[in-house]
Length: 247
Ligand code: NDP
Image 1 (tube, rainbow, N blue to C red):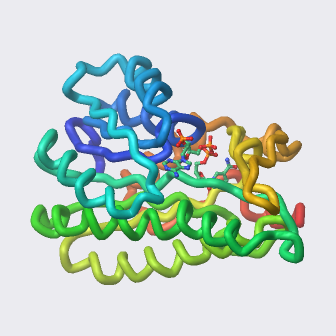
Image 2: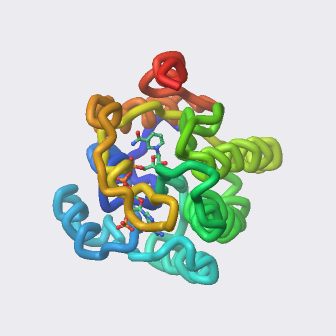
């Protein structure tokens, strides 16, 4: 896909960080946008920031772990725009706790938000893309989808699950012209560590030093658009070797 003008792009986790930066990057290209996250007021703020005409941006607040809402949400997008060209699975929550301390429920939450939510949304969007005989999924995995790291066992497990599931979708989607680009960032400067879950599922609430030194979210977003333009299967951002070396 070389041109994003008038493409319908649905971004989860659009209320902050990388999702907000992706929204701005696609807006500059003249895409039509669907913005999803839990916080409506933040989505409205991001919508204003795009300066796109009102009908070109649909604010669609949704807790992505409410799987039963995925299909009605997809139908709402189709009713508004008539198609879905790009689905960006970006909503995510990290973890800062050791395995021996961490409650089982925390693992379930991390799998729900980082993995199962994308399965529910993919299953809701896929029939529309198959009818179109075109579509592109952008999947925010991580270096944590490739290696194990301390204090992130559940997050790593969910990101590894994304890798396997979306490799399968790439294989199955091929005959319907449905593509998948998996993104594996290292450290990007966002609030992800503040929002990470601790051993009992509360917010970790501290800015990770490496996170604070990470690359800016708009630089990350530009690299993602470039990868989609070039139909890349998978990219690393922020240096796999540099991040892997920290652990
Ligand atoms: P942020 O914490 O800034 O953003 C997370 C986004 O996810 C927010 O918009 C949040 O919105 C949304 N979100 C969280 N839970 C839910 C939910 N239940 N339902 C709907 N939306 C939800 O972090 P980043 O921007 O850094 O993270 C974006 C993605 O990038 C994640 O998948 C993350 O794993 C991945 N990533 C980030 C890296 C980094 O260094 N920053 C490195 C590697 C991967 P709201 O609170 O309004 O619901």
